[in-house]
Amino acid sequence: MAQDAGWGGAPYGGAPHGGGPFHGGAQGPGGWNGGWAAPPRPGVIPLAPLRVSDMLTGAFTTLGRYWKPLIGVALTLFGAATLVMLGAGAVALAVVAPQWDELTASDSPDAAELVPLGVAFGVLMVLGVTLFLLASAVVQAAVPAVLQEAVLGRPARFGSVWRRAWSRVWAMIGTVFLLGLTAVVPVMLLMAAVAATTVYFVTLGDADSALPLLWTGLLGTLLLGPLAVWIWVKLSLAPTVVVFENQGPFAAIRRSAQLVRGSWWRVFGIGLLAVGLASMVGYMIQMPFQALGMLPGMADPSGLESDPSGAEILAVLGGLMVLSMISGLVSQLFSSIFPPLVTGLLYVDLRMRTENLAPVLAEAAAQTLPEQYGPPPAAPV
Image (cartoon, rainbow, N blue to C red; front, side, top):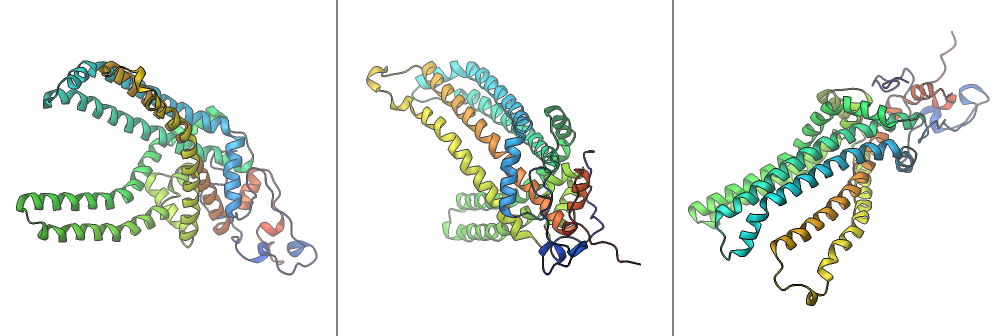
């Protein structure tokens, strides 16, 4: 199957699902009204409008059947990013170790002693954010690439998924950046309000006059918050569209808004459920690692030196950082895969409901769609 077979974005010629023969009613003998038949299920979902349980089951089934390319791509990317960060962290610790010893030995360190630590921390933070964004973009492109094959019951191999995801990575980065702006604007307004209030108060020393500025900023944030959520949900299918339909960032955003029209609350609820489940599972994954990280603090202090050296402190901090990175990696593997799977199935569901995608997918999967699920037959001439 070509990568875009059945996914090009054009509605099928028949009537969309949502009424008519799909929902039953009196069934006549034979033909279009010849009785109900279950829709075909070539892959992880039935080729018919989906229930919430179908989407969640389909997402978990995709994880179970296609865990090798999904986990493989995510583990390769996040694992490589983690190794780079561990190496960079080790180099940074080795570089700042002398300054750390001087800092801990001094009762009143001056600003010059803090500069190397600040520079090292800043470089690590920028490197980590850059690596995380790049890895997340490739994973977000890999998930729909796997899901395209999972819906049709086709195999998805690591190499083909990697090539498909990498070919869409820059479009995905642009799309994620545009979506991020919807969340950044309210936060920036709140920060601007707090900064303006602080400057005003420090300059004039008049708290009563500064309070209206603070309340205005908070009110603006509260008003723009729901708008940002509405826009985010409206555009939430854009990453899936980037891969499924080979669209660029702006075209994907327009397409997402078109698909979500009339189904905003459904998209919001299902997306929130997927994120909530992913967060809960991710937290459960991190709990054992957090317990391991607490063991050094539970050790008997009588067996320890009263004044540990800077190297010993750095060793403990390094071990805790390794545990934190491992737990974050394992949790991130699930949290970065499951919600996009549900969003991808939501995209398929909306297209089956509004654009009658099911017959196209059945044809691509070499399945025969029962007449109750396909377009009605042509009227006799």
